[in-house]
Amino acid sequence: MAVAALAALLPFTACSSHAPATSEQPNAGATAQPTVDAPTAELRPFYAQRPTWRACGDGFQCAKIKVPLDYTKPSGERIDLSVIRLPATGKRTGSLLINPGGPGGSGIDYARAARSVVSDKVRAQFDIVGFDPRGVGESTPVTCMTASQLDAYIGMDSSPDTPAEVTALDKESKLFADSCGAKSARLLPHVGTADAARDMDVLRGVLGDPGLTYLGKSYGTYLGAMYADLFPKHVRALVLDGAVDPAVPALKSNEVQAKGFEVALKAFVEDCFLDRSCPFKSRTVDGAMKEISDLLTRADRQPLRNDLGDGRPVNEAWTVIGIATPLYERAAWPRLREALGKAINQGDGTDLLQMADLLVDRRANGSYSNQTEANMAVNCVDHPYPKALDVYQKAAGQSAKAAPHFGPFVMWGSLPCAYWPAKPVGTDKPLKATGAPPILVVGTLRDPATPYEWAQGLASELTSGVLLGYDGDGHTAYRSGSACVDNAVDDYLLALRAPKNGTICPKTG
Image 1: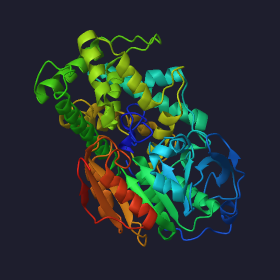
Image 2: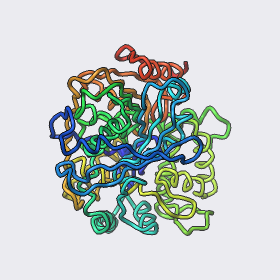
Image 3: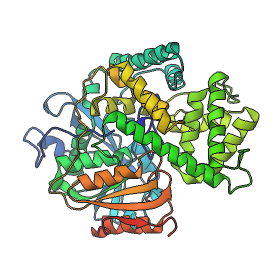
Image 4: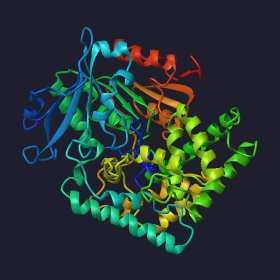
């Protein structure tokens, strides 16, 4: 999805810059395949697996399960999925499967934070279960580039000003696609969201749950909606938080997401003026936004200082990603104020670079998780992308008018899909999940990565969709400080009582 357009994303989202577009960076594709009611005879052995659970620290249990590489050939090659669970603390109702988004986010890592991801009430009744989707992390991962190659790819100029810069961007995008094809050719056709949703149903059967209870964030909302569309009769309760709209075409989704980041940046600036440490010399929103534009222009011409000692230039690309990262969570806005102050006043981009590293999952030793590669691999098979370079160039120019700070970065981030070695299997259509019980769709009014209009779209497209809005900032709403949202989600998960459709939770309370 374009949800990955700004950077292969924090564990909550779906976004990427030369690492895709969420959510993340986020674009939903629908499956053309029919609803699945029950496993075929060839698939039943997968559902009948009884994995060996082993203790893996801090009260968690880990296991691996087998799934078909190709669901059209279930007797063929099998791949491993890594699974983790935290047993319920009270009288057990079943399992709650959770997904953090991306695509490319690790469900294993996300589940490790289960004690903060869900409430104590939910944890008492449900085993909290996470898994790395196929192609991600510990589950038969997609591999493409070396760490130094990823440094170059993520740091490339994604707002090209000259024909030479466009050519360089095109060359780097093709190298990314070719590298994935060289190292992961057999896997790439089979990492799409429809296959991941089928894996979830196998996992549901392995866990012994008659119906799936699920909490998906960001891109995880698309995965959950896909599951409901394929297996409507297997749904118990699905919470889709920070929703993606599957009906929005890929490049349009990029544009909408870029606008979402622009809205979030303006909200940050308005809030900044309330603090004495706000670094902007101007005291108007427009003036401060221009100061940020000037900073990006400055970084494009002469990289900011990097005190990490790793030799990376803090150029425009890394600066944009560094600014985008703290927009995901309002609690990170003070750090963005400080980082922008250092960058604007001292030419020091170190803090921005460190925040950018969080978004692309670059570790302190210079290595990366495979989040960026998995993100692109899923997006490129989930959605049909244009093949012509001039289409991206035109779209980037248009998006720059609507979202001057983020538009080109998000739009050009999808260019590797023009050269992708595996054909797209998804289409951009609504997912209806006809026959499913009520599905709770949650959206935050000023979400940067998955704009509220996507939640409205998904809730209206699902035949049993129920929309819950949150008048807040940041990416996703559940367990983000709103008692109204938390109580509504918990009541739905525990008692299957959905809130009134269209409910808006206030900014406080």
